[in-house]
Length: 148
Length: 157
Image (cartoon, rainbow over all chains, first blue to last red; front, side, top):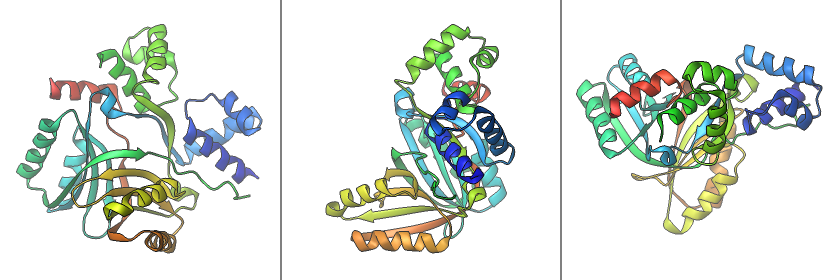
């Protein structure tokens, strides 16, 4: 039962994480104290990494979203280069043909080209595959609630 | 976009559950202004507020990035299948030789293989490529702190 409640609460936070605990208690038909304890526990256990606002970047002035697959010449240095870049949105370490997948956001094509130039100049990637991205759905995965 | 809006967005990117009073302390913007701006931004730039979750801690051990390309006639069918799939967390259209890129979540590798097979049974694919995610080094980091927002504004100024 506890697991089922936790799963339900995670899904509710995935739908709207700015909702108050009182609202979540109502929606999930769970006592407020249980909601408080469960959400607190999920945070402490690291299940909930963070609550964030998902943005429509083109509408706020950042129309270029690029997804880049990279194979490193020096893995650690490339990772740090990408992680510290102000345009980085998401960075994943992969298995297979490429070492990393990076998603970056730019205000225009010139800024994107500057990034590519910087990357080439740093000499940290030997293979790069670049793609422009248009989002269709984001953060839509829901846990199956039949865990009980 | 106004500087104040970017500051508010940065706070919400850092923690969507942040109290308006805390946001006010960080940004030095009055609470009433923040309240009004958030309501406005929810109709413009903020799509939704969500929790980012470690699915592996809940039994979903396998995450994959998968790229697909299909012929022009099959593209819409593939789009609809991927959009409806319960495993797909993120779906986007991409260029440069591919049609779609997804990030999908599964219990194990066999589920990934079954998923790809089920797509292939329904859509004639030109190509597909599966990349397993070993580690998440950063997620939704862009504009995620007022400090970073200042850096970005310096860079683009």
